[in-house]
Image 1: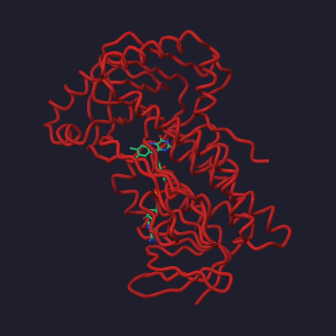
Image 2 (image 1 turned 120 degrees about the vertical axis):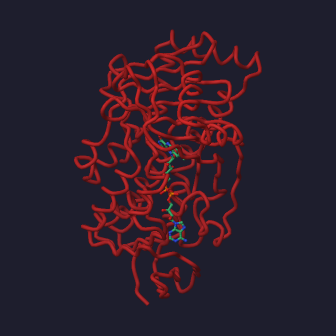
Image 3 (image 1 turned 90 degrees about the horizontal axis):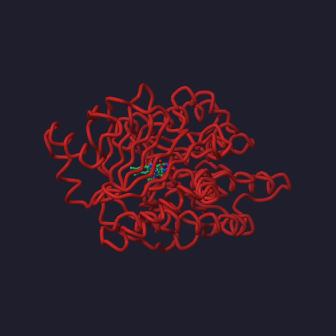
Length: 395
Ligand SMILES: Cc1cc2nc3c(=O)[nH]c(=O)nc-3n(C[C@H](O)[C@H](O)[C@H](O)COP(=O)(O)OP(=O)(O)OC[C@H]3O[C@@H](n4cnc5c(N)ncnc54)[C@H](O)[C@@H]3O)c2cc1C
């Protein structure tokens, strides 16, 4: 049996970011991840385009990995929000609001790879592929049983961080409940090649079936994220190429000329999951294990990275005074510090997902008036952008 200060379960984007942040502090860190980096990058999840808020870029800069990411990232300098077939629209320009870009778009697989390379250089014990199968809290530590290559391993840690995603088993094993909302929708993603690309521009178009986003990628391509009821999502994924392209064109319109599909399509069923608490004895939750969001506002990872930043900062302060990383006071403070940001962003994403789905006429009218008013109201634009850019004071 080996002992470590912190065992992180789940080496996805938030787990790996936390491992890197904590390794900087000279802590003895173990990171357990069930699926190899290669498999994660080659899966549908690796193809997700992620809009990183300015605050998240700041976190990666402080972790020292932004220089390796920026050449693969595309800045968002303009945002165009509109309602298909209706009058409402809002345009946002980064320069009007005094910023260079609202955020940056990166493919999840590029971020996974850079994080994995950085973790490998930092003396973190990486157990991968290794799956946590059991945990027990005893004698001021968590005892975790893992399976790696058919062998059973035990790690004793003073703090276990669950970064094991929306279906978190750790959350269940430590008895933390969850509230859920099934949107009855699937996000269909893929890459599109537009005939007349608009560089550095993100489009959010509200269609009769749900929101359709095109995010800018290198070489004039765009990442498609199209939210539809499950049945329609299955049906468009099964369409022959030409029929799909025609369907997409009808939904998006001709703003970028003819749209060509440049990749396979992948589907992600959408559910809101929120943990009822952020900690249990010697266990903290971060990222999707704490909150899984609708992707309409592009906030899930951004919120998870702020969990990471806050937890790492608290641990530094506490350890400088010779404290125990799994102490109740640290975990309680972590939950307190994260509650406002969680309420704000989960509420915002959920409201947006519900507001932009209905097709009932009075609601469509309200939505269009809202978009029009926002277009004419500079302060409203600034508030919306500040909300989405996710900057925070890390003290
Ligand atoms: C279509 C789509 C678009 C999105 N767009 C955006 C966006 O633009 N901006 C944004 O901020 N967010 C976006 N998100 C959300 C973002 O992808 C997630 O919030 C983020 O990836 C969550 O990362 P995570 O590390 O917390 O969880 P996960 O990515 O779920 O990682 C959990 C990891 O834990 C591992 N694991 C699970 N159980 C165990 C176990 N027992 N033992 C060991 N390992 C285990 C899993 O293998 C997995 O690798 C989007 C999501 C979707 C679906």
